[in-house]
Image (cartoon, rainbow, N blue to C red; front, side, top):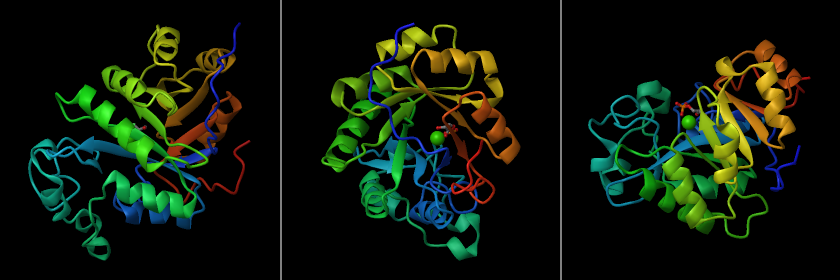
Amino acid sequence: MSQHPKQPWPYPEVVAHRGGGTLAPENTIAGFREGIRYGYRAAECDVKLSADNVCFLLHDDTVDRTSNGKGEAKAKTMAELSMLDAGGWKGAAHAGEALPTLANVAAYCQAQAMLLNIEIKPCPGRFEETGRLVAQEAARLWAGASVPPLLSSFEIDALRAAQAAAPALPRAFLCEAIPANWRDILAELDCVALHCDHVTLTEALARDIKQAGYQLLCYTVNTLERAQTLRGWGVDSVCTDRVDLLAPQRPLA
Ligand code: G3P
Ligand code: CA
């Protein structure tokens, strides 16, 4: 079987989900700080576009759950988003935390030598332009960095646009259940990796993906036992909300 020729991305065994998992406000600098505090060398975050096309961090389509604001994220300018408190929902100790731009996070991660998996998370109806603009911005922000950020997305149209805009940035196809045509998708998008929901993965499928020369990450793995099982199947990395339970210093297998 032919091996995938792309340069691998240096996945650590564990990656902090949404910055620092669930211990701090997700997708904020406070979250990344929490990941760093536990020794994490890599984090994942969700990036979308504001109404004025600034790349910023937010998981949901609306700001309701993770800030003191209300409404569709895609209708707000970055100036409006910057006024929101993205930490208070997680407790008074986090009040006043800002909703960061990708530029804020790039500066923080590079200063901390933290690797970043940018999940391109488009608002409805903005798949292609989000893929294009996030990829262009990531290429600009990490120009000259020794390790580029890894781009991933559930949206094939967004990944295709990212591939066209910044072909040198490594990409991962993100899915819940792995589709039957995963080989075609990974080949077409020239991905280095597949990221899947760990509950849908089988040992046989994990072995097939690894044998085809791709890297493999599972999300969201929140127990040491499950992380060790997946490691035993050949999974390269797990993304976790429990940065306190899965210690980067302790090998999984
Ligand atoms: O990138 C893996 C994982 O973050 C995907 O799920 O909903 O947490 O963005 P979600
Ligand atoms: Ca995500």
